[in-house]
Image (cartoon, rainbow, N blue to C red; front, side, top):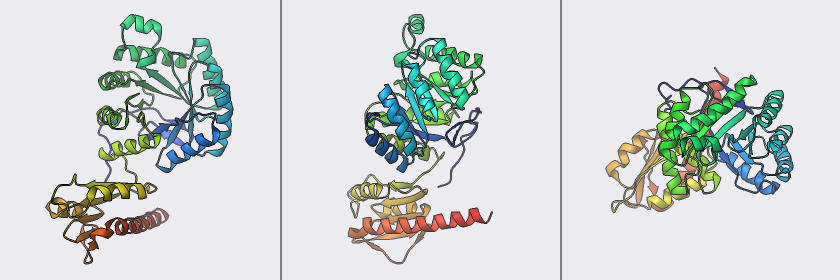
Amino acid sequence: MKTCKIINRRKSDRIYVGKVPVGNHALISVQSMTNTQTANTLETINQILELQQVGADIVRVSIPSLKAAESFKIIKKKIKIPLIADIHFDYRLALKAIEYGADCLRINPGNIGNQKRISEIITCAKDKNIPIRIGVNAGSLEKDILKKYKEPTPEALVESAMRHIEYFDAFNFNQFKVSVKASNVFLATESYRILAKKITQPLHIGITEAGGLRNGTVKSSIGIALLLLEGIGDTIRISLAANPVEEVKVGYDILKALQIRSRGVNFIACPTCSRQEFDVINTVNQLEKKLEDVSTPIDVSIIGCVVNGIGEAKTATLGVTGSNKKSAFYEDGIRQQKKIKNEEIIEQLEIKIRNKIKKLDELNTFKKNNI
């Protein structure tokens, strides 16, 4: 798949979360967050490894207690992917997280405390060269701001963000990114539009508390796509009441659909009808599971009949077009002589996809070594 850059992507400053660049036209990174009890060290490590396997660039870990902070210290030594420490209420936990090697902090201005506490966090982060995310949320705005605006509004979210940005500016600290999230798509997107015109720092975008897998995916896709298409956003997180692995998959699906960034197999598959010559839905579902480990971008067309099958197969890297008993197989748009038995499509297509990816990887390595 050819990738394209969003026209007029908002120019922003560059920060680093670990070794992952954020802002200033860096690749839009995909984040997720563990939902395990952080104090359960082994379970949290295993979930982070699962998130890393499906392509997460950065993972956020909640630290609600000193016990969780001590666990985080162990986790950080076992994990290579950058970890963000998520801190609420107790600023001392932020200081501990920095001490224990966090690659970034996320603090919530609505509950972290007064300016003195924030100044201690900034001083410590500055000393260790650790960036911070100012994470404003419609559900936890400061009391005085809520009193002023009566309810969460875009102006209220932006005022909260700007208040703390001014704190950071006062301490000459510019290694930060900002989010102004809400569960309402329109509230979130308008907040980001306003904020994007006021600051040059990177923006972490998402629709917070979006809901379950289906509803949350729809809301997140709409909100994030609206912003990305306007050039707003440097890193994303899909907030789902589901396995966080699904958040990463949906994140990449959004970026893939917008042709911003591609990872793994892009399946082009028909919704099926009575013309299908094999079970398309089962084929796609099984192949998605079998090929979750694949990171190399590749387009695979799986169409149950010849109505659209031939056209789609000719534009994909690999393609199958359904026909009676045996289906036609295409590679790089060219129909191959040997057909695939319909009952062997899943097995044969997995083999062919993996073989093709091996060739693509070898070609890419050759090109890099000979530039």
